[in-house]
Image 1 (spheres, helix red, strand yellow):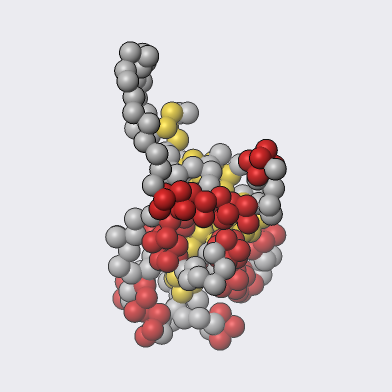
Image 2: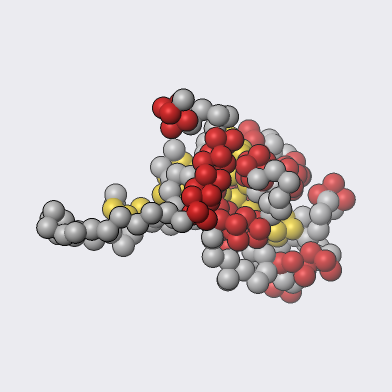
Length: 234
């Protein structure tokens, strides 16, 4: 399955009031592995960013002045995301801007260009009801390193979202680069016979047992109570 994690930066909050896209970041996963085949566009919006938006992304009018218009990159962008499952954090916000840009060019809505759109914020709210579920909060909760994120950025945020999503869906603990079918950093290791060793049995502490039980409850909730181990011990 091909998935694209997508994030945008904009001049402000309201596409229907003239705010525009200024950055698009796309990170590709195939069969739940990073491929390194990503896309990143800076876009000249033809207007200044609002002061509050500029504090978030730091992309000045001067920096964006020589960047291409959306009309120049739209075909390359749509070809990259075509038929993929698109994962966006707070999808209605980004879709609002993508749809407005496409509408201004006489193009069809974004969802008609891709296979499916998934809102990872909605998924996080189901798993962690009543908690903060912004990207920074999820990175902290799930142990994803965000030390390089001083300002928001389309590609950086898409990369963080990919790692957060893998943790949310419990497919694997960390992302692996797909290099010809081998995981990054994988090495061949000699098999060791452990039969001659007296290995100690370390019991879990109460805190570890409680954390494990909390994790099982989260998995039960996200699966609608259909986890196989609960059925096995029922």
